[in-house]
Structure formats: structure tokens, C-alpha cells
Image (tube, rainbow, N blue to C red; front, side, top):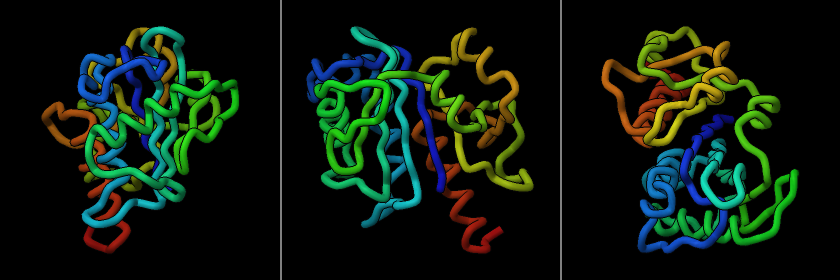
Length: 191
């Protein structure tokens, strides 16, 4: 199982946004691309992947939306499809435990601190160890959206191992694709 978690610093935490303006919903478009990069193959889904979105924007932060590749239905490889499922998840009442909003899509109150208490994550950082030269690839990765981690978030992840996908700073969804490719290469003996 591979887990990707992406912090959406300004992403709306209610379903009151337009699918025609995902960037205007706190850069929800970035998170939708991360969901798709995490889960989609050509003509198939990665059933052994989960993608969590930690939403910190207005009006009711923090919330976490979780996509499970093993259970997902009704997801097409476009931003609007992922956005519609996020919108649906944020429109239902939720508490401290995950509640299913659609097949394979879950939502709960709570953010990064809780997520880190539940699972150890490696952090994606351009100054980290090159993922291609790492002896082993971790099973869970934490990324930030288009903004850097805040000082408070950095304090929470200061002891986490850090990995890089190369010398250039990539978009979060591109980083997920590179990591998935490295996992595929190692799993299929291409290393």
C-alpha cells in the first residue's frame, strides 16, 4: 500500500465552490490533479494507493478527504470529476471519524497533526535523499500544495525522513507521478 497525503493550505472546507473555478476554491485544482496522479494508470486505477487531502482553508478547517483506490467508483481522470467527489464529501456532516461520502471517498474533521499521529510519513523535499538512489522507498509520502509547509507544519515533520525526486522543484502531482514510477520500477524488477 502506498499513501500520499497533500496539504491544501487554502483549499475550501465546505462544498460551496464551483467546479468551473477550482483554482478559486483555494487551489482545489492542485489537489484534484494530485488525486488523479495518485490513482490513475492508463485504462486502470492503482488499487493499492490511498490519497489523503488535508484541507486547511475556510470556513471550517481542518478537514481530511481520503480517496481509497481499492474502493473508488465514479472517478474519471479529469479535475472536475475529482472536484465533484471532494465537493460531495465536504457537503455532508462529518465528525472525528471518517464518513463515506461516495464509494471510496471519505471525509472527517481533523488535519495534519492527527494524520501524523496515525502514520509515519516521508516528506518530499527537493533537498532530501534522491528517491532513485534510496535503498528502500517508503510507503507513505507527505507533500504540500503550491505553498511551502508553514513553520508550524515543519515543526510537526522535522524528524521525518526527506526524499527528493530530482534537482528541480516539481509540481506536487508531477512529484507523485515520479514516485509512483519509481515504485513501479522497483516492484517489477526494473531497477
